[in-house]
Image (cartoon, rainbow, N blue to C red; front, side, top):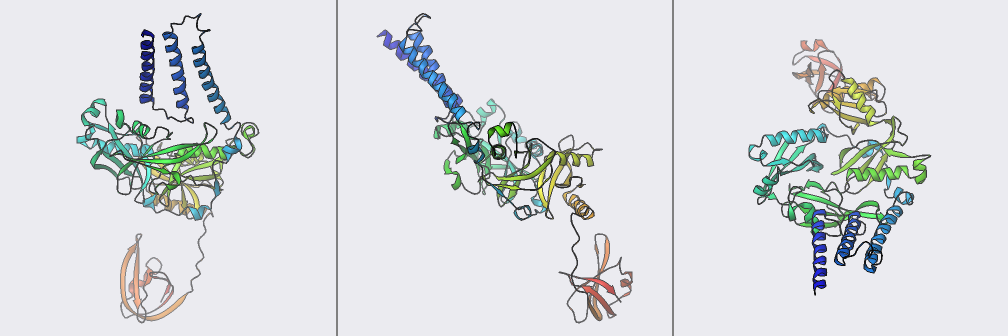
Length: 532
């Protein structure tokens, strides 16, 4: 009876310890999860220790105990299977499978990437967005003592605008205790183009977040609902109605036990109610922007670029091996967020052979063969233009400016505030334009392209026409600081634009005077070439 009681206590102790470990570590009950194998090792080690104590085995008895041998044998099997699985899942053995995880299409730059209007260009990087968010939070006297802004700052498309969003979090465990019944009342939304920052207050607080504790912690909430799912990095997004959600991608292992990670499913969790929706990745709602993290996409492309001729070639000969450059940025195209990064030789020269765009929702990847400067070289060129001001360049954003691949770079001061902008031609990175505003920068950049023969003035093929008639109306205006006269004549509904700089005698004319005008037709006004 005493022995049975001792065994029962031992079993209960093991269950209690494992329960505490599971509640704290949240391992997925899945053979593809490394933490599951760690869980098994801990279980068997605890079982061995408790068995030895229950049997009161001395060190001389350990070698003779059949029960202990069985437990240690199982432990050895678990360790061997884990190590073998790791090796058999690695690129060393499966280079071709890793190389084919990502399908890469060849894209046409000018066709695929449209020219953006300036109010759609994300001018800020994550660090600048963080500064704006903290400044906005500091102005909210009723909240700043209780909450802080989470460091997430997910970049999404919200109602066709590039924005970053991040929830608030409890400032401390004490602040959680006093506020957890109402939940977190707001999230921050920052327009990356206009720099407008808004603290969006919710009718009901968010009850499921990363800063919650116990069962309302978002990771624990997901684990208890989906005990077998292995989640990738979670992101915070809002739908088109501004409702906050956690986007929870589920890993899919395509090679052996632990290799070839992509995304197979995505779980959406309402941050207010905790309700979840589970989708296959191909059925995920279009409004979500981030199922694949940027780091995962970059890793997949690196496999594609370096393992073309096997693993040994990627380490030794490195023939035809390409890899992504250090760093990435985001582009908003057709209501999706695409990761942009350059592609260069694995030997690390100072030029790119092209760049890739990778869709964070679908994993669609396009390669653009555009040789030119690396992002680091472009950043150095931009900083060189303002070296007297000691501004630092942010990682570039790739834009289409008049059909030319162009690095767009924000220049920040020591306080992290954006002060100027730069545009650097990808193929000729010595062509650098800077300006205090985006439009000023673009105007200078366009002029430099004309001067360097990259862009040519389009030939004017309009026919020269002539009209002779009395003036019926005449009015004056100013365009870009220059005076113009606008004339209408009898028998025509057209408006003739006369530049005072070119035709000073126009100031002598009045209504009723007969004039002979040579002109070329335009969309709104006709351009006057001669006035008599």
